[in-house]
Image (tube, rainbow, N blue to C red; front, top):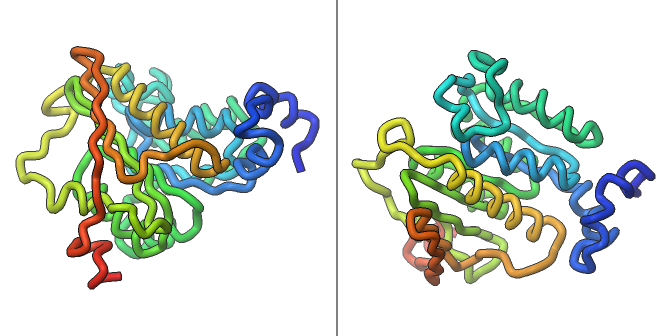
Length: 251
């Protein structure tokens, strides 16, 4: 049940007929893994904590650097040199002491990633490199856990939801294959701060929809964001029956 403090804290959310008490209870009972606590993971963690998602599992092996602060809004100047997980825990605990926070400070290998994904109801990929995204996707497909995936670089962003519980849903590998050897990171190509905030906020919204059970998630759709022209475009994405991760021959 929700206590009096929770009813008051989440009252504006509970007023929505799409959420109501039942949806808020579903959020309270949910467990979510956030992979990466940088530009995308910052708004994701902040909004999910504020919304009352009962248990947040926070995964990041990095420490806060001064160059992060232009966009990674969960951290502050006093956190420079501190573990991103510890910095995030400090901030999230101050925002909402009602939730539980689980720390993953070490890099996740295949086994530990599989265990981390199996322990939650939903995963948000907020990482900044293709190999991590591929590993997270494979773990989610194996455990049949929905994955909310976001990316942003320079002035372009992308967002999609992959849900292996739905037979029609593609996975990350269906869409991107083996990626590109020339993939750039934000440290090489740059990124504008509000763009990662926008993509991360949309990731949080998709997660809340999936967990509380309302709306139409971005399954089978890829949202493309052009920050330079403030334009949004949507592409339909189909499952690849021959996909080496989720295809019928590998199911």
